[in-house]
Structures are given as structure tokens and as C-alpha cells.
Length: 355
Image 1: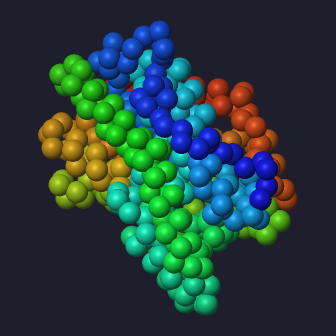
Image 2 (image 1 turned 180 degrees about the horizontal axis):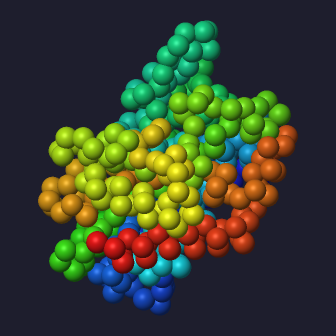
């Protein structure tokens, strides 16, 4: 196994102060700023790090590039910098890779049944059958390019060891994240001024290419799976954000207002650069908090999943590096990150200045 993988020390537990980022931290406690927050950002896939307890179960051939490509790792830098730059934004980050237990999937108390079914479907897929992994990918043992991350156990004892380890690690990282995530939103709701708009965003990124055998991320995704040039926002509706009112996660007019603000901030005028619900409508976090916020009956309060084109967040220099063969991951381009955050801050200002 590559020594360049990113690990978290065994037994590490995470609490509120580890996972939540806001302007003025740590000098100013979150309780003192919660009332000014109008944008809550979740980072369920922002970390690439594996807990060290999983070392015996991770594929020896896994490289740092494969580990990081499996995650939405640039969203960590973006989320933290966004919260630092805009005092009305708070960012909450999952400390573990989505490998352990994906908090943007329906929660489970036991990794075993779904993981066993995933491996069974994977064998059928590799034998040529067309089959998906919907409903069983809360723990996903392969990357989206099909690279093995977790080794399939070959004995009952092996299964027991892997499942027990995953369940214990879930308590340390993703379950702690989910509890803190919900605490932050509840605290903001309690403190916010009456009638203030509130947008809760689940922040993600995806490349429009997948990894080749040599590590170059250049194999084009199917057209239907490709992201627009900037980002896709999902509210569980159609291309205009419309659907039955009890199903969408934020009102259609508000979803369109968010899209328009980001399009302006990113300097794009075509409808194809910032989209609604194409190709992604939003997953578990959008359903969960969309339902809870919709119950408040306020049209400018709700939940969106935002999936940025990873190339847009990384910048051209880092993207060019990932298009070449290799097993490493580029350092964050700080100048480009500042530009990205500037556009996010501008979008927030536009939303606050227009009804």
C-alpha cells in the first residue's frame, strides 16, 4: 500500500469545534454569530482521509490520486475559505472519507447488509451484467472509476472484522458529523431574525472525466452524467425547480434566484453553465433538510445540493496535472481558490441585495 495515503490516527473522535468553521473562530463562539448566518454549507464528502483502523482492509494498490479522486476533497478548502471570507456563512465538514459511511445516503446502523449486497452486485457487473448500486452504496468499496478501495473478505471472520471496524469508525466520524450538522442548522434557525432568507447547501464536486489505468483522469463520462461549466443546483425538481410543493427542497422561484445569482457572480449568461436538477437533483441531505425546512412554510428558506464542476474549483493548473498519468494529487492553487471564493461571496451579496 502506498505510504502517501492520508490517514487519521486510530480512535480519533471529532466534536463541534473540529467540524464547524465560521468567521471569527475561535475568538468568537458560534452562539454569538448564529443569528447573522444566512448560508449553512455541508461538506459530507470533503475529506479523503481514512481512519487508521481500516489499514488492513484497504487495497494495497490504492494511490493517493485514487483516494482523493474518490472524494470531493477540494470542497474542504473551498468551504473553509468561504466561511472565513463571508461572515454570514457557516461550514460543517465530515472528517472521514465517504468510504466509512456516506452521510449523503440514508443512514444505517450496520454496514454489513448493504456492503455484502454491493459486493454481490459488483461481481455481477464485472461479469457483464448491467446493474447499479442504488440503495446499497452507503459504504461504497470501489471508486466511481471502478478501482478497488476495500478488499472483499474471503471468510466469515474477515467479514466480521471489516464490518465491525466500519461500524466503530462510523461513530467516530460520519455520525459525529451528522449530529453536528443538524445541531448547527437548528441553532441557526433558533437565532435567525424573523423572515430572513436561509439557504442550506450540500457542497459537492465532480469531474467530467474518470481515471484511466495510468492515473490520468481523462476518460469522458457519458453525456447524461456531465456537469455544466460551473455548477448544478438540485432541489429535487425539474429544470425550472418545479414539482409538487411537498417534494421539492426549496421553492422553485427561490431556487431560480440562487441559480441566477451564481450565474452572475461567475460571469456566465447561458442557461447551460449553471443548471437546476441536471444532472443531479439532490440526495439524502437535500431530502432530509429540504423536508424539515419546507415545513416552516417560508419560500426563501430551504435546501439545495450544489455540485460544482471539479475543474472549475481546482483551476487550470491542477486540472492539467490530473490529466497526466500519475499517482499524486496537486496542492491547492491558492490564487485560484481566492478567485472561487470571491465569486461565492459575490453570489451571496447579490442574493442579499435582491428580494
